[in-house]
Image (cartoon, rainbow, N blue to C red):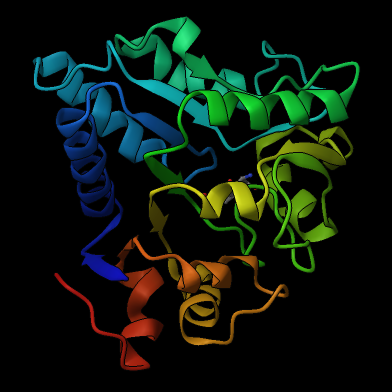
Length: 250
Ligand code: GLP
């Protein structure tokens, strides 16, 4: 695993955008696995800037997103489809038909998940998967205790995730209780993984995930078993990992 420590959130976002840009330049028709949450916003902003400067094109790139809330329409401001449109897709030259986000209004969630697994296979798998991490170590919406052997599936969100994500909604009752999410198996099948972490509140869980045992109690710990993981974090999120003796690059 490679670990890059960036000074602050902006530097972390720039470093992550460098890695994604390199992937797109190296393989223009690559499949990017994309993430939502607060952490990737700066990374997407950097990618948009590079596109606007004419340094990067996504004209051939395909994308698959990690997850979506069940019950939210793509036009709902807190849906992950809306997030992706407003933070990235609407500002770059990716073709709309090449962007894929699970349908939160699917009548048959099970069938939607199976179709998504099939879609990822038909695209040839994910070249680079971007990930954030929840405070309890969740990746996508794979919560502590979830089976590592699952592909895309229906998830019951934990109280701690509902609480953490309530900051984006007016009232906590508005936060959906369920989501559709790629599973750990889907994520582990990506050829390369790029995890980004920011802020002191992630320092303990980052340490547990990358220095502690591989356990279902900390879903992100499974990444220790993946052959090509890059972790990019700011000093606040990584300092405990550094103090514990993990080797990091500047
Ligand atoms: C949500 C998303 C995850 C994301 C996590 C952390 O639960 N489903 O994919 O990693 O939030 O979000 P943040 O980056 O805001 O800390």
